[in-house]
Length: 236
Image 1: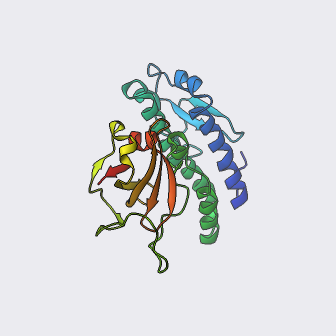
Image 2: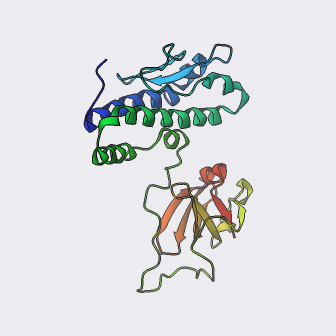
Image 3: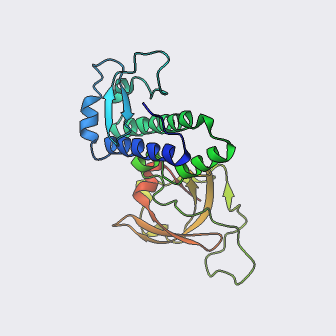
């Protein structure tokens, strides 16, 4: 087998394998779910170089020709909620994709490895894709307020605009109502593991949508159903 050698060739291989794995975890999920039978031996999910996916036993040769994906993904299938199991497989698949890419890139210099990582990082991870964790966090983190006209929003009184830990209680499904309008809260960004101070400026209880404003004055629309599910907002 001819291994990819250049940054472009390695990234193309990464994209194809990633595409196959993403399809297994989304469009072909029911088929993948059935193939990952807990009654079978240790199984692995592979993304192939032609953009497909396959559930197989691990390679028999030791050491294997390539880094191997997580062993025994099928054993946990029936012991957890389906979406949690899919997320777990996605995490391990992300790790495997990176392992294969940098196995191929072992002879790249520092600049080449850096360029390869930047190309890989331009795509969402499988975990982000299957959990939609980047759905409302695609922009850069809000910047500190700049000198200039005062934003005509409720004053954020004596509170830090960001912190590592929430100081309020987590938003619950029962909280989603027009009464949230004007409420201050903290919104969690997984990208940098920080909680940002926000004010809820409008709420549509029927669609579970809300608009918030950061202390910097930036506004953002949120899906509150997703926020509640992931525990990413704390009310103050």
